[in-house]
Each structure stands twice: as C-alpha cells, then as structure tokens.
Image (cartoon, rainbow, N blue to C red; front, side):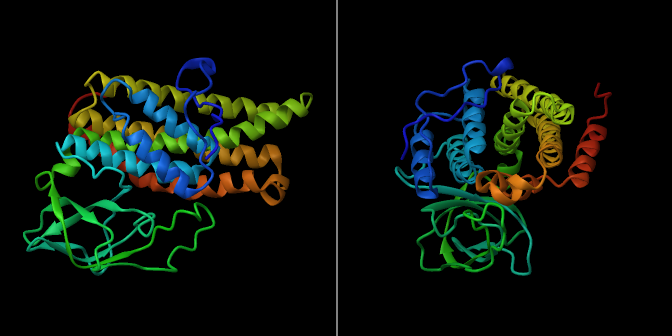
Length: 337
C-alpha cells in the first residue's frame, strides 16, 4: 500500500490543511478493506467530535478513487452502528451493511436464522461479516449480524454488469437458514440518530467523487486560461462545490453538537444528500461540456471517475427523495425557513 497522502478534500473554506498526513492511498479493494479496519479502530464515528474529519477522509478517498471510498464507507458505518448498539465488532473483520429491500424472496428471520434473498449486497464475497436488515415473522424490520462464511450463504455471481464501480459487485445474496444475532430492538436501525448520519457519510463520498472530476476541469482551465468557456464552467462548478462543502461542514457541526437527532436529523440528511447529489449532476454535466469527449474516451482515470460517480450518486432517488423531504417538512408542522 502506498504511504503517500492524497490531496485532501477539506470541508474548511479555501482548502485549508490540504493533506491528511497519515492517510494511505489504497490502490486495490483488499488494500481499501485493510485501511477500513485501521480507520475503524481509531474511534472515528459520527457524533463523537470528529465527524468533519471522518467525512473529509471519505471525501479524500473518493476524490482519489470512488471505488476505494465505496469499500471503506460501509465498514465504518457498521462500526458506528455496533457502537451505538453497545456491541463490539469482531477484531480484524471486514464489515458490510446490507439494508436494501425488495424482490420476490424477502429475507425473513425466524428461529434464530435468516432465510431468503437480500438484494444489493456490495462486496459480499470479499467481506467477513455484515449487518443485514430482515423482517421478523410478525412483520417488524430488524437488524442482524451475520458471518458471511456461513455455509448457508450463496453470493449470486454474474449479476453486476455496471461499468461504474465495477470493482464493487453489488448483487443478490441468498440465505438458507443462516444463524444471525439481533442488533438493537425491532425498528431501532431506522430510528437511531446514526441512520441519518450514515446517509450523510455516503454524500461525503459523492462529494469527493465530484471534486475528483472538478480537478480535471481546473487543470484544463489552467492550460486554457484565455478560454472563457472553460473558465465559465469552472466558475459554475466552484459555486456548486462550495454549496455542497458548506452543507457537509454545517451538518458535521450539527451532528457533533447533538442537534441532528430525530426529525431534525432526518431533514438535515435529506437536505444535504439532495444538495450534494445536485452538485454531482452539475459537475458531471459541466465537466463534459468543458472537456469534451477526449478524456471520457482516452483518459482512463477520468472516464472511471465519471462512470463511478454516475452510478454511485443514483443512490439518491432524485425527485422521489425531494418529495420525501417535502413530506417531512409538512409533517414537522412548522415553517422551515
């Protein structure tokens, strides 16, 4: 693993302290998972006073390579979840969080075991353990800890055809009477404050991916300093990047101040994710216009960044998530601004 620190993505204004001095730069998914274990052991969990540092690390890794950040973020989320539940992760194990719902064979917990199919299980074949949501026989949604080496687990191969995040296969996993340990009470996973905070951590990864693409536009603008079209696109990108950075910085301060719990935390997460997702869409579009087709066709690193971010940011459900935000504001029953 390289020990060279990547250029930092800072949540502070004007790029202050642009390097994280002890952050290695993984080049492969196994290296990323090894880094995740190291970071998870350093007490970097949201709400403990270092939320901005945590999100800066994720954004910095994402600006380097979104797939690397995509491997690290779920492990750190799992560590934070287990800490909130007053449980301890297995030392040296790599973790995922499989919480997507859907499909014709839903995952059911009964008699101490899980049976069914879980969709969208990222890196399931490469991880040691996972936190998995499932329904109980009474219909409650609950979180469970599972050992992914259990013989009843089958990772479906060949289901991931994405050109973006190609290194992060996220297909279905089949469970056949797999022993599982409850984590928290029924419904706890969705109602705990950390659920909203974890959603913002994902947005920090999106933000870093956008910064990585934006840097290519900056480099091009330096070479074309007399090209007003390129500098126009650079200005628009900077404006949007600044809005996303400020949203993440404010959110990190609110989380650490204990002011992002309950409905306030839910609304904050929805606002921040929408702001960052809109920035990602703008950066992808403006970069394409500023740079033209050449880097998408001939620059492997840039083309990968664009493909990775295009797939990753679609975890934000666009108009559906905007409608959800609007509904939350109405449910709050008070003027929001």
